[in-house]
Length: 167
Image 1 (cartoon, rainbow, N blue to C red):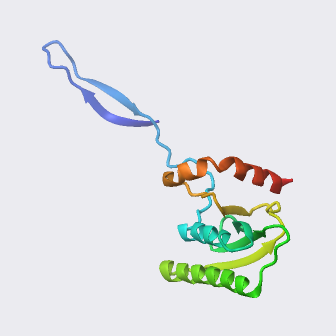
Image 2 (image 1 turned 120 degrees about the horizontal axis):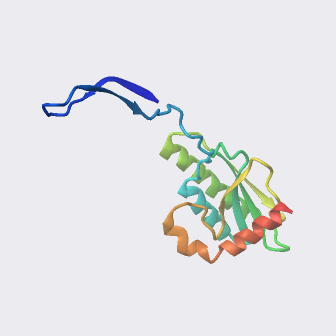
Image 3 (image 1 turned 180 degrees about the horizontal axis):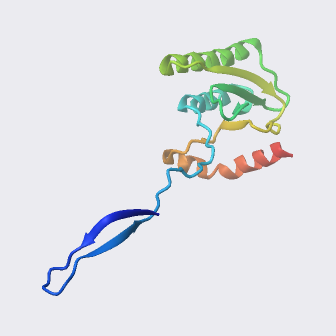
């Protein structure tokens, strides 16, 4: 607490005498409360790219994974194919073109360096510690309320996939 000296209270009457009071002010700390680490969210373009990649023939699901949650600029796009499906060269070229166009579009828009990689996986496996899924086909991981109604019905599917990847 901090003391404010020389503060006087005066009461206007003929019999009153002047009194000195000490006024105590509560101590205000200059420390800030510890805030939990919140990793940055992926740009909308990443979510749109995931949805676009999921529409490619032969692709069942797509997810965007950030290998280190604190660096949103490195994103790996994992494509899970339908069973017994292989991508031909033309389809693979289309996928690469979509990814490159998005990557360079973000570089132009944000003046930041982005690094995107795409790979085909048999199934979505558990992501390593420190990694984060930032987009999943059919589901938006955005905090925006505009996605709420679209996402609400798909959360059970997302939770199921997440649980399977943790096993």
